[in-house]
Length: 247
Image (cartoon, rainbow, N blue to C red; front, side, top):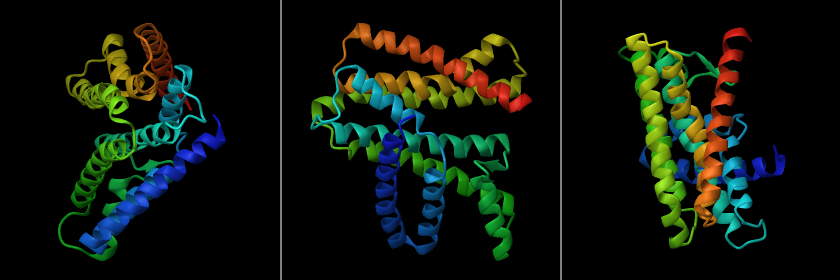
């Protein structure tokens, strides 16, 4: 992973989130504090895999780093990290996870804030509600960040269908994961279907596709990217699952 590229993605995210924190403070300081927690979650750790694959999908399809379009492509690619943040926040809540990247998960963090302040009601319910809302904010702001990236209209039009498919797939994959737990479906086919849509599609396949779309790649290259990305993404998730079970 190119540390310069990931540092540039971090800079883009930090600038965007700083501006949104200022807007949130105008609504209410408490909301600003919550957005500060979201910003800390987004900026804390993470490999920036999705923006990196988007960038190199664009480069592989003919984009050049000194092209006048490059800064807008980088900003558009960085928006994927907000989709990732929203998905992780919601996933942690659904899985009742207590830590993420060495820190309390968002719902646990806000439940503890409720406890510490002695507020009314159940701390766990407050934490869950805060996590749902902040995950939603991240997903909504991902769209805002893409729109504000500065892509020329023709490029934005090519990117839009890929972006829309990616959002649908990742949320569909999450639903299938929850459904599988409820139905007890432990078949390999079901597990691979969840991995395909919950992780592989929006981690590697669609980021490569998005980069290719912004570079006006032909159908053959897009098809090759997608086959490669789907297989690599499933392998990535299977390895992550093994590490989660066996360490």
